[in-house]
Amino acid sequence: MGQRWRDRAALPYLVLAVSPVLTFLIGWIILASLPDCGDDEPWWELRQFELALLPALADFVPFLWLVSTAPGVRRAAFVAGLMGSVRYAIPQAATLMYSRSYGGRENPGCTISVFFVVGELVPIMLTLWLVTALVVAVILLRARKPADPPA
Image (tube, rainbow, N blue to C red; front, side):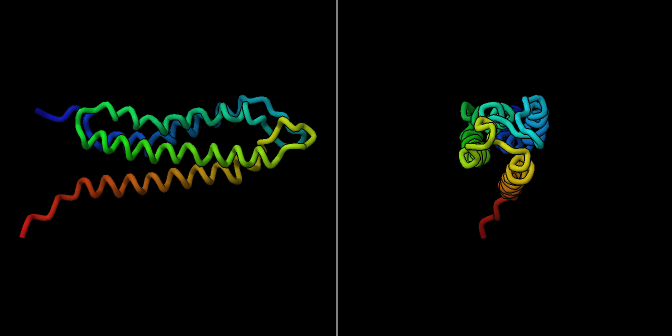
């Protein structure tokens, strides 16, 4: 009997590699709809800006495969979920650190600058995505490579 599609070990990795395409677009749409509290360039409140980062919760989707009965799939879900957790946590931490360092402006609640988002956060997120995509590619290529026959 063939393997069910949800019991393929590659699926958690593929979801992790592809999810930023959708989440990035949705995040930008949310960011564009947030109230801007800047005078000459866009600034946002941290609590509102966090809404734009909510789609990144998709980085935790690979953990759903932990319920699989196949050990290889559970292992893949754990590894992909850990990579997704790191990919989620780093931008969150960078945003919090940036927000904490910019208190005390004319509007103290507005601590997230468009310059931070475009100049620092987006490159961080793209780098994390590229690194995880490369790791996923290596893992999947190694999994496809047949084992050497015994000599």
